[in-house]
Image (cartoon, rainbow, N blue to C red; front, side):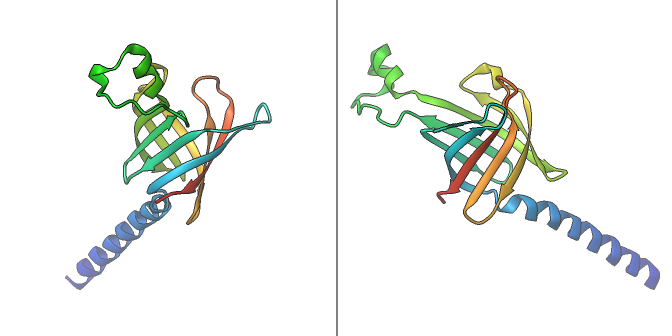
Length: 154
């Protein structure tokens, strides 16, 4: 009986410690992040992301990017003209589920403004600390290796 309790304790400790490692690697990701620059490592080019943010929770990532100087239109979307609606649309956006596997984010796009990305699995390397986050992966549209540099907003 004593050996059985010892074995149970050892297995429990191993399971808890392995779960803790997985959670620690993802815990710094959660929050709201503003993208400060996008670097195309293949082309050696850097781009201004404009008004782009990532919202990361325990199992989901949402991205949204919008025009900086959108006009204020005091109407509901249902009452806007097509041109007024276009002036309010974000430049990009998506919703993904993710898991951390082998130290990388494995994210699957559930919804995106472009159907090109829907259903795609994107494996992303990442570096995170208290105030900064970098994602690095091949961009689905052109297979160019890019980095998204971010700062914590919340």
